Amino acid sequence: MDPRVKPAGDSAKNGKTMATFHFDLVSPEKLAFSGEVDQVDIPGVEGDFGVLSGHAPVIAAIRPGILTVTTGGTHKKIIVLGGLAEMSEKGLTVLADVATSIEELDRAKFAETIAEMEAKLGEHDGMELDHAIERLDHFKGIHGQLHSTAMH
Image (cartoon, rainbow, N blue to C red):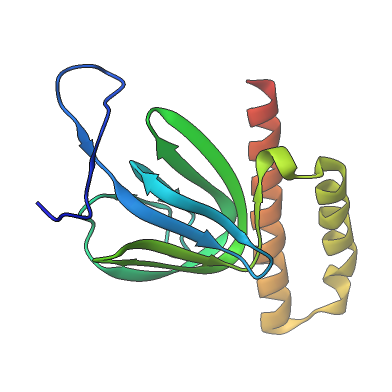
């Protein structure tokens, strides 16, 4: 077994352990997360995907969405607004344009940002308009997930 991979406790207590791996989440403002994790679920441009210990090396573009970090049975949700994810033998590194935990998010300001994006759609045309609509749809999806998270 790779010496960097450490067994983690299994919340199911069935006698098996889950291998962990190192995960760094970096944004221009800060190191948002660094530590050993069980799993990371990433909102990829080509589709959402989960990363476990031993995942094949990959580099993937990230779309705006909610990244979920699972450690010891707890789930931490972090909003990312694009970036890159790289899985290597050293672990997973996500370089996010913006990374904000749900607890730190100003929900009113986020809703205001969506309204501003909608108002500015008329300023775009062609491919620019397509990209603006796609980004707006991602933000609305995040906003919808925030409301369902707040209700639980």
